Image (cartoon, rainbow, N blue to C red; front, side, top):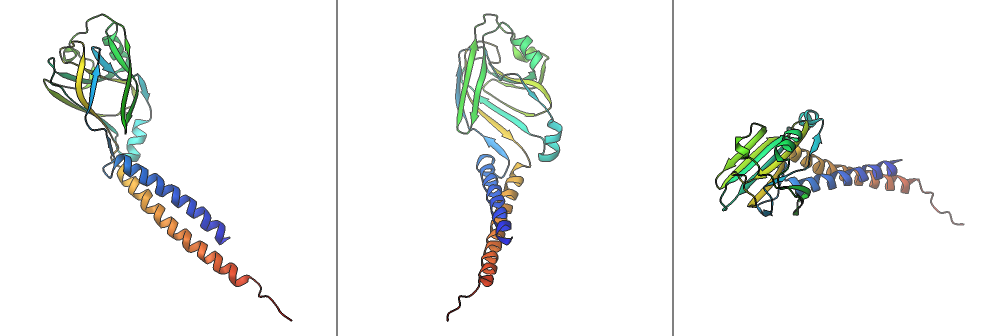
Length: 219
């Protein structure tokens, strides 16, 4: 009985330690996954995320704190830089008919960005003049946006501030989950403690089994 209990505790401890260690490697003790600055060159007037539906954001926030998406962009090109978040419906209306690149895949670590460009010819209006953004940031040479994730369907849009075509900038992306670092440390420490407990149980099991083993008789 002690052997099976020790084995079960060992497996649970190892899995918990691996999960905690992996989270610490990815998010660190601060609970933030960050890409660092990377070059983004897109032959389009706007780069946008696909429309995605976010559900149960309040439940996640109550457990881990409010997750936040952070985007920072720097450029030396004329036209400035704009970063905005809008509902999927508002973003679709604003971008309709324009030359827009839609992200098809993004990996934060290691960083990679893939996108498809829609062939459109309509000139887009300056994004800063639109009253559709739930969060926005703009600047002549740089802009930083931090958006607390909420339930709904949203799109992130990156453009030149003057809406001209040809995005050329250095950008970094981050995902922050406030309590994830503490959770990772807890899993790692708890997993190590469980493994040590499992070793003690297995040693006790072997000793108990050894005492019950009958001694050989001679003669």
